[in-house]
Image 1 (cartoon, rainbow, N blue to C red):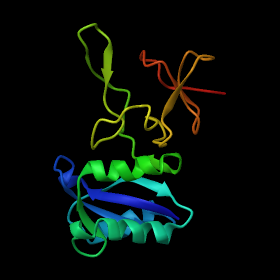
Image 2: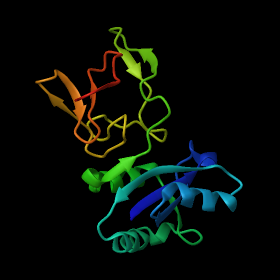
Image 3: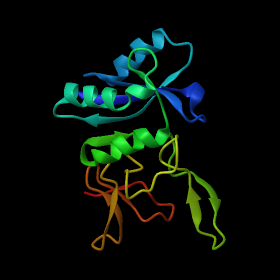
Length: 167
């Protein structure tokens, strides 16, 4: 079962934030169950596909015991969640924003700058795929002259034509 990190939309801009660390076969259903008891909209930050999910959950609960709130809720910085996702990179996923390829500005050389893939911070595309959120990130490949995700097949040259898939 995946081990998930959930936070409330209310504290997206605050750090530290309340983060639920738990396991579930169906994360969407679990968010719905938690949402019933929460006055604030809940959002998935990311998850790890763990072989021994209960052991990983117990390890993380112990690791962050000094930051424990009520139950499985912890007061954590976004960096702590990112660190955990990066440690298990090939089995982790980060929640991708609605439009990670939206051009938000241009740098001094006129090169477009894109909205980040993750809503809770700036993540390098070499760490996480901006399309599927996989922790293996994008890798440069000379054969297609661009960065690609080995998990979902996303291919990007970051020139504005980012929605091609490798076939």
